[in-house]
Each structure stands twice: as C-alpha cells, then as structure tokens.
Image (tube, rainbow, N blue to C red; front, side, top):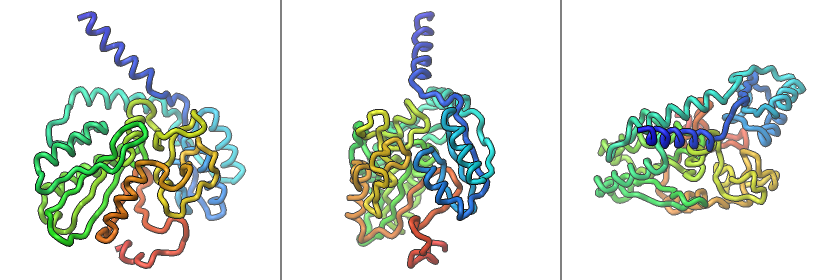
Length: 322
C-alpha cells in the first residue's frame, strides 16, 4: 500500500512540476477604449497577451507577467487609459483548475458514444468519441482527417448527413486557439443534437471540427494552460508556434516576420501551418455548397462577423445581423 501511495504521489508531483506556473501573473482590465487609443492598443496587442479583441467602446483585458506588469501599466498611464487589476495572481487559479480537472478525469471516465460535459475532455477522448459515433451511425456520421499537426496530433472532424443529394453545407470549428477549452464542448453538443435530430440533417450537411489546433490544445492541457498557438518550430527555439487564426490566405500579412514570441504571429507565409492548410483546402473543396462558416471562440461575449479589417460592411450584412 505504501509503495502504491508513493507512486501516485510521484505522479501528482510530476504533473505539477511539468505544468507552467503562473504565480505572480496578473490580469489587467482597462476602461472602455476610445477611437484615439486604438492605434496604441493595437501596437501593444502584438507584444502582450490580450484576451479577446480590443475594440472601441469595449475594455481591453491583458495578462501580464510580473516583469511585464510595470511596462503595461506605464503604457496605460501614458495613454491616459484608466485600468484596474482584474486578477491579482493567476497562479492559484491555474493550480486549482488543474487539480479539479485531473480529479474529475479520474472520477468520471467517458462512456462509448457519450461526450463528457462536467470536465474538459482530452483531444484523444474527443477523437475516440467521434470514432465511436461513426461506428455506431455509419449511415449518417463519417470521420474526416484534415491534416496532421507538426507534433503528430490529427486534425479530426466529423460529417453528419442524411445523404440527400444537393444539400447545402454548414461548417463549425472549435479550439483553433488552444487555450479556449470551453469551445470543444460547444462543438460536441452540436454533434449530439444533429445526430439526434433528422430534421437538422435535412437542413444541410454538417461539418464539425471540435479541436482545430490539436497540438496546441494538448500542450495547453499537459504543460501550459494559456498556450494559444500551434506547436510548429520557429527560428527562435524559445518561441515556437503560429497563431492559426491569422495564418489563412486572406489579407495575410506577416507584419513583423521575426516577432516569433507574439501571440498573434501569423507564420512565415499563409497556410504555413498544416492544420490551417488542411482546413483551408477542405473548405475550398466544399465551397460551392457552403453557406455558413462559424468559428467558435471563447472570452469576450461577442458575435463577430465580417469584416475585421475595415469598417465597411459586407454586402449581406443585414442577413448576418438577422
């Protein structure tokens, strides 16, 4: 019994030591931003970890290390942007969540053909769930592998369809930013509901990708809670990864091509990331039937629709608002 206890204790300690500590990290929240402050905030956002997308009339939220905090506070003061400390120390929050997640993983194992909603599932569990669904409902569910990440995790989704000829297509993806853990359960719930409702499948063919950035998602669970990017290598070995959300071939612009540590680093070129290239190629294949593309993100309580690079509305803006 003593040996077993020692093994379990070593496993717990090993897990804790491998996990990045956020002791002393703070989260700062600004007052609602003005149009005059946006150029400065946009520049800051390329060098510091802003949560959500800063915008006029909305507060900006930024996570800072103990070394970064004085720099960001000084920048806010120079811009005369009032701010508050939203979270004084992230360390205990990250550790509490880690312990809770690991305890729930032991207590509540998943069952075949059932997603788990009382804890965050691993990428492997999510893939097993989709595999079980495809085996149980082969007439309506088909697994799809879009790509392999640089660390070997498959970019795996599912097509759900009644098989009607000429159907329109709907696309949903989640967790393209690795740390946004609440998004895969949203995609999984969509899968559950479409599997259960033939009427939904009569509306369209559904393509659902619960974890669009599996390498990064796995790394955020095992090593660094706030990891956001992919895990592809960069010339700076201390700053791997690319922001996959900014790696698509639409107005792609490297900006500062050597700012590898930036959370919004867009990569060496458009579609440089295998995850993004696989998704992009598949979208082009179904483009003639695709009528809706929804990317599920977390933080900010916003619904965003095109465009993000200009204030000019898209031609079908009224339809999008409706």
